Length: 112
Length: 111
Image (cartoon, rainbow over all chains, first blue to last red; front, side, top):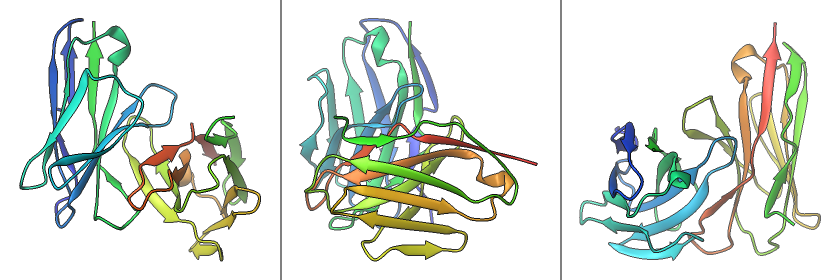
């Protein structure tokens, strides 16, 4: 039973560039949430996707956007990268109506 | 007031010790509560859900006090492998609520 997978594992970008991160949920899960974790902090909620629509959004600017595909996989896009966007980006999957979320290994983004 | 507050630690304990972590949350509408553990540079992993009646999983016991908006985790007979950061997590109150994380409490178990 495959768990949550994310790609790439590491990424280095320059300020102003755009990045796309990918996530495949755990088998049987239909909901994907994205989190940003800065060093020494707990993960911060970015947004959640269900049935290919954004259901909830945290306090992140419009530079952060996403998408969910019919197979439940998801992408996180960040435009006009800032140095402060450097963080571990975590994808979590869950089953609608269930509170437990299961995390992928994350993508470590460094913006220089 | 922060949404989820935890003592950042670190807690340095010898093997075999009992250690307790506490957490408070601000949103009284929160419906779901969890403890996650996170190893250095790894993803958070669900340790256990927390129920109003309290629940136990082996050496781990979690308790919830809704009136005080307080959650606890007790680890008995600590093992070296318990060394990690423990994250207190609360849902935001929706039916499929997003998770609000505390900053975590670092535990180091020494031989």
